[in-house]
Amino acid sequence: MNRFTFLSAAVLALAAAGAAQAADPKATIADLEARLTRIGAAKIDGTDTVAGKTVPALFFGDRKINNNYDVVDAVRKAHGATATVFVKDGDEFVRVSTNVLTPEGKRGVGTQLARNAAYEAVSKGSEFCGPIDVLGTAFDACYRPIKDGGGRIVGVSYIGHKK
Image (cartoon, rainbow, N blue to C red):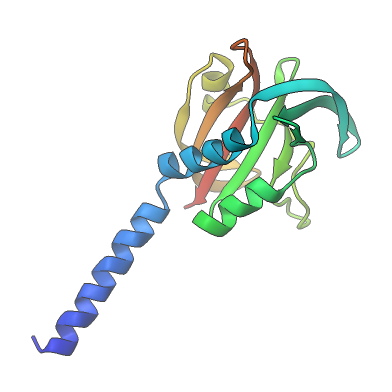
């Protein structure tokens, strides 16, 4: 093996290791949560309109997350991942901030978390990480419940790496 071949192999190995790390759903969800936590504590304060629906207004600190896409877009930029923040509305979780696009190319806000394994886990206060279908596309995903200062589930954070 000549020096060029060795260096090329080393570069490819490092690139593969970096890609594997970049596609780690648990690391990506931890980053999303850290970004939200830096803003402030989660809380519900009144209602807001998202995609024509009235839903609870989810805040982190003083920043309303409904219809605000800076955090989810930063996760896409940093990790190449889809990211969503859902608010709890009765028994449903509604997308209020997302970089997940509908087939028409619009942000999928106003849509609900499907009644699947992720829904079951977060409804009980647990994390779900694994393969999942999001609006018709397969992802390696993580979902975590978002709790307010009193420990009540007020939403869900999600990230996904396309399979």
